[in-house]
Each structure stands twice: as structure tokens, then as C-alpha cells.
Amino acid sequence: MHERNSVAELASALRSELKRYSPGEKLPSSRALIDRFRVSPVTVSRALAVLAAEGLVVTRPGAGAFRAQPRAERTRPSDTSWQQVALSAESGEEAVPRSVDATGVLATLTQAPSDVIDLSGGYLYPGLQPERALAAALARAGRRPGAWGRPPLEGVGELRAWFAREIGGPAGTLAPSEVLITAGGQSALTTALRALAPPGAPVLVESPAYPGTLAAARASGLRPVPVPVDAGGVRTDLLAEAFRASGARVFVCQPLFQNPTGTVLDETRRREVLAIARRAGAFVIEDDFARRLAHEGGPALPPPLVADDPDGVVVHVCSLTKFTSPSLRVGALAARGPVLQRLRAIQVVDTFFVPRPLQETALELVGSPAWDRHRRTVAAELRTRSAALLTALRTELPACDVEFVPPGGFHLWLRLPDGTDDGALANAALRAGVAVAPGRAYYAAEPPAPYLRVCCAAAAGTAELAEGVRRLRTALESMGG
Image 1: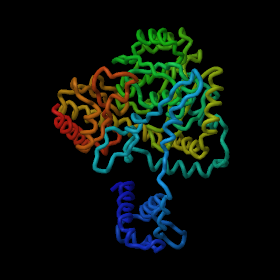
Image 2: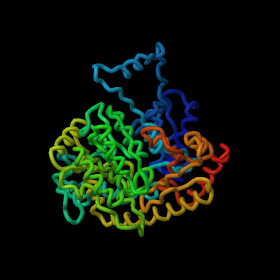
Image 3: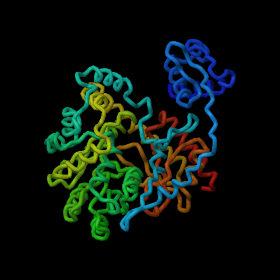
Image 4: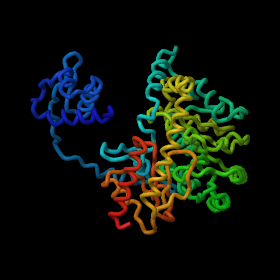
């Protein structure tokens, strides 16, 4: 059993037994719990910590765990109805209403129950994460001189240099001074949007688009304007028209293994995107989230857009998180020209800096032999999983269609039969024991057709992927599909 499930199950068992103890009474010792439930000391410690966080037990070092005193009853019921007015009120003639809707993001962040197969999650299955290498890197990082001191605001120099080499390529088109270290890709994306567009401004986004982009834009008071994507990436003819019609000065795109379609921006359109943005006097935010998720045996990857952009049109966003662990929230922003100072200023105001131990851990990890081993393992595993998922979808759901099969990433964009309610299907799938992401959340406007995003990274393996698709078929059949 995985450690996380063991902790949850032990916490649940202890929670149900607490009524046997009086407030202040001592619970069985850790040793007794270890022997009784046949779990590790770490599991006992974490389960007790869960109950302590819930206010159910109190732990006293050297003495043990005790049932907590019951919480005092409120003298009157809470009344938070006033917040509905406060959160919706806007002042000033030019105030722009903001909506903070994280529904699409939460769909990929919420951990599925133990009996549900996760075909929605956006992170690697724990067995695919380099946990041992991360633990060793963290231990080494903690012993580095100055590891617990305040880092430079722009980031640790060696890590900035590493990202500059990764992004700029062998030609060295990017300098370390043009890189800022960020707390993951989502933080970098939010910083870039706030830096480049004032509240109320339009921002061009791919259609469909990553829900985190839509949520971050709307939370900043921006108006997402969709530009359709096809098998070659964003439609550049429509991109030029969207710039003209909207007056936007920012376009957000994922040129490599786009989320959710998986498309790769073709060579001609790469040049056109930069030329169109340059003529419009606009920035391109390049979200390069999936570069390290290429499949084994796939074609050579095109360089990032920023590597071919000497004029500062592109603001590049990337991260180590998807490729390693959800908790290694280390990423980078790369930009040229005065915009870099604005990006830096907004990041400092929002977060001060990324904790130095985390930066030092990332440095230790990318500089170790385990890094290249992990690259090879993930590339091979994603190729196997993607092929297994595609086979299962085509076998079990012949009425559905995968319009594009990407040579990288961990998701497939599944076209559903006309008339299918993708939200209702996702709910039915969850009841059938499989989690998938409805396509509606990926559109800034009305979707042109029903879709699901189906992922292969968070499941335990190919057998679980096949079973998950069988459960999805059951859900579709229950709806008459």
C-alpha cells in the first residue's frame, strides 16, 4: 500500500476510536499503534499530525498523544453574507469585474480517492517521480554553505545559468541575467500576465487553452480572447485578425505539446507568430511546460520560441515541476529588454523570492547522474503509457476520436459524439470509478464540440489505464452513448 493511503486509513481508524477516550486522556503509544496496525513509525507520526491539524488530538513531545478538549460552541451562528456584496462591489467608472474561478485547475489538482482511477491528474504517478534522487538532493542541498540564507532576488546564479543553457540551447542565445527563478510555472505565468497587461485589457489565448491560463487571466481582471488551434498549432491567420480586432498586446501560447490538444506549432507558424506579434507591438508568453515530457523515439524538438527571438517579443515560462514532483515548485521566466525589470518587480512584491533550499535542491538534482536516468525513464514510460491509452480508447470507445496523437506530453484530447454533455459524462465517470477532465473548462467561449482530456501520467500503469477506459465506456453507455 502506498504511504499516503496508509496514513489516511490509520487517521480514519483513530478518528473513529476517539470517542472511547475522555478529553485529555492519553491515546495508545506509538509503539502500540505500530504493532496493532502493522504500519511504520512515519505513518503513525503523520496520522497523528492529521488528527492534530483537525483539532482532535494534542501531541506532547516525550509524553504522547491525547484527546483534545472539545471546542467551545459558538455563541451565535456566523453570518458571512456581507462578503457577497464586498467581493462583487467595484469602485470607479473604469473598474473591471474580476472572477476567480479555479474549477478547471482544481479538476487536475484534486487527488482522486483510492478506489478511483486517475485519468485526469497533471503530475507523474508517485512511482515515476524521482523520490530517492530528490531526497538525496535535498540532503546535499541542506549542507551547502549558505543554503538557509536569503537568496538573490532574481534567483541563485548557478540555477539561472542552468536554465539559460536549457532554454537558449547550445548556441547560448540566452544569458543568465535574462532569467528569473520562480515558484513554478503557474506563478511565472501569473507574474507575466500581470506585468504585460493592465486590468480590463484583452489577452489572446489558444482555443482550447490550459485552464490555468484562463483562470490567471480572469483573476487579474483580463479578458481572454480565444484563437482557434488546429493540428499545426494556433491558426496564425486568425491570430493576426484577433490582434487587429481586439487591440490586444499579449498572446499566451504553448507551442510544444499544447495542453489539451497535444499539438506542436509547425515551423512556418513559429515564424509567423513572432512576426505577427512584432507587427502588433505585442508580447508572446511562451508556456513551455512540457519540453521534458517528450516520448522516447520521438522527433527532435524545436527550440523554444525565445531562443529565436532577439527583439524581446517572447516572455518564456518553464518549470521543473511536471517532470519531477508537485512539490518541487521551481521554474523560470526568461525575457529580454525593459520588461525583465517589470517582471522582477512584480515577483518581488508578490513573493519576495523562491526559498533558497528549494533552489539548491533543484541545482543538486539537475547536476546529478540521476537527472539523465530520470529523463530516459520518463521518456520510455510516457511512450508506453500513451500508446496503451490510445489503444484502449480506440478499442473501448470507437465512437469517440483522438484527432491528434502527440509525440510528447501525457494527455490525449478525446472528441466525444455530438450531443454528449462532457460535464455530465465526467460526473458519470467519477461514479463509475474513473476521473477525467471535461473539455468545457478549456474554452474561453462556447466550445465547438464536446471533448474530454484523458491523461496517462497519474495512473499506476498500463493495466490501470485500460481499466480506467473500460470504466469510462461504462459511464458513456449509462448516458445512452
